[in-house]
Image 1 (tube, helix red, strand yellow):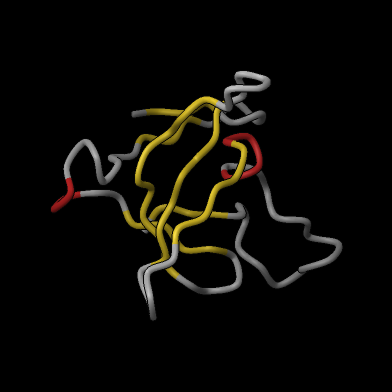
Image 2: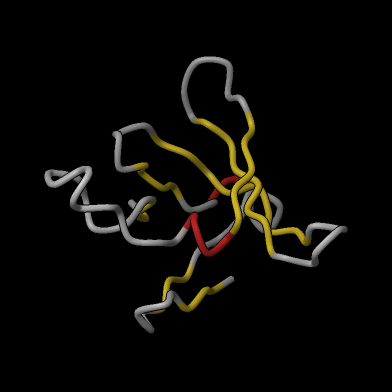
Amino acid sequence: MEYIRKDNSKIEFTTILEDEKNASLFRHFKGKEYKIITVAKDSENLKEIVIYQAQYDNKQCWTREIEEFFSKTDKEKYPEAQEYRFEKI
């Protein structure tokens, strides 16, 4: 899959549903690692939602709008953080 961010940079990734053994690994700006299970559509507003899974502890699943998942980190609030909220490893 691929996604084009608001800054026009493109990110390519593989989800768990596409290829479980080779799914892309992402690091959240706070340091933990996650894999994207899939990208789905919200039934109410048709926005794309990322469904992703923690790669630590109990491997809990989370959801986030795709624009936010691939957005830049708030550098005013987190000046030492990586550039994007989630960065592909």
